[in-house]
Image (cartoon, rainbow, N blue to C red; front, side, top):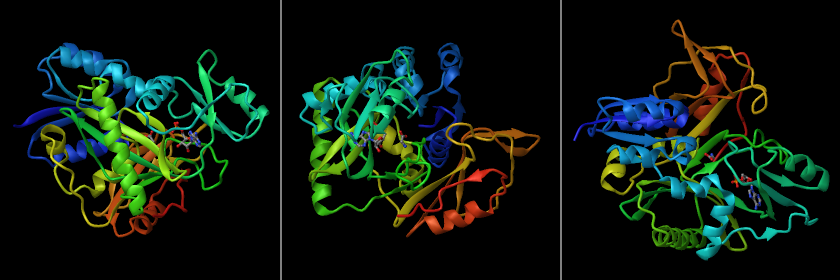
Length: 369
Ligand code: AMP
Ligand code: GLY
């Protein structure tokens, strides 16, 4: 088998997926395509042998179903199950109906603070907020006018991201990752798309045992509901009251968790996707640090020229980058993902980050394992 592959999306996560495919003997060629060219692929000739979906929007728009209908093999969740990400109310029902633990719903007018408001649609990671008083609540509730929302109890604890791959009716689980979602270490710092990640996360025996129970329950729930896709399910979990509670589902690999996991992976990623092989890992920890631009997430500065140091042990994936005349310029909030595998990857990553030349560079210096 030697496949011509397309990866949908053009962020750092998709670059990392492309890089993993390129290392595989199963791959003949691999190209990234932007989300809004999916329609063109349906009518293109020749058709790709395989499409791997990175970002959520085309999955939730039903392109996996449309491609498969056109005879193109896909790695991605179908439209029906994409509601686990695109509708938090659908996800809540799925969780509760299958005996999976999650935060309790509160009445909309509840005055029990802190509490969490969640909009019921795709909001690019900006549709959830922990609220501490009614002023914050009223202001945030107006953010996505016309979109339904609900309120749930606030859970306090340690968070992990667990990515699973549904392959021919069984779940293949990757080791847990930790994602640093906030812009800085401050408790009230804004949520971002992710400022860094590492994998694996060390768990206690009790946590591992409960995680295994949860993942079996998830597999059973997906199969009972008729899941018949080969695609990724991401569980955002929090350890509280002596168990794992689900905070969210996504129907894709996490960004930047994907970069951390692929950096740590030893065997062939495509072989896992196509043949259901179990993941194997390198010694040490896969780490990823996001290089963002000042002003992110609200109004990132764009247009800085960037010079990257040359260090073979660091993988650099482009996110918000524009290339002009062979030079790199910042062109978004999250600009680069830098990744490496080591006993502790963060000293080397921060050292590399320090040496990157970019006028409005911003990254979290506190991230560590
Ligand atoms: P979500 O998109 O639902 O994962 O929410 C984004 C982030 O908000 C999570 O990673 C948590 O840090 C926080 N969060 C969401 N739901 C809750 C909750 N019920 N209690 C505490 N924090 C939450
Ligand atoms: N890093 C969190 C996400 O990809 O949703």
